[in-house]
Length: 143
Image 1 (spheres, rainbow, N blue to C red):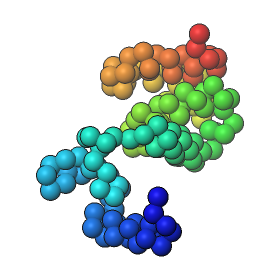
Image 2 (image 1 turned 45 degrees about the vertical axis):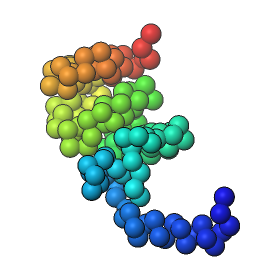
Image 3 (image 1 turned 135 degrees about the vertical axis):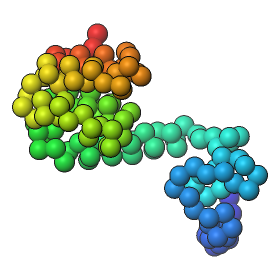
């Protein structure tokens, strides 16, 4: 490893030369790149980077769902199902489940599960939606 001073200067050089991108983009050769010049087509990600991204995404899901006053009062099984949905859908699509969210606010687990299953999302992800809906309805971990 480089000594501290040249290492710090290299980091500045790389940031200046490559730029810093928070979403994937095509570089001048058409290679999918992210961050500070990371070629994700050939280098990809290492296990630590994947775990860090997963941790951040789980925390983002928790924080987003926590804006609903009822969310923190829901049991952990149902919170987990909702976080799985949020992870897959993202905030805009999750918020479109207005009838499910209304049912959740009332603790009407059957209606919430039904609304989750009567969606385009459920048609796209099949077993995942069925598992999440079952968790919402029963409050139990799937077997």
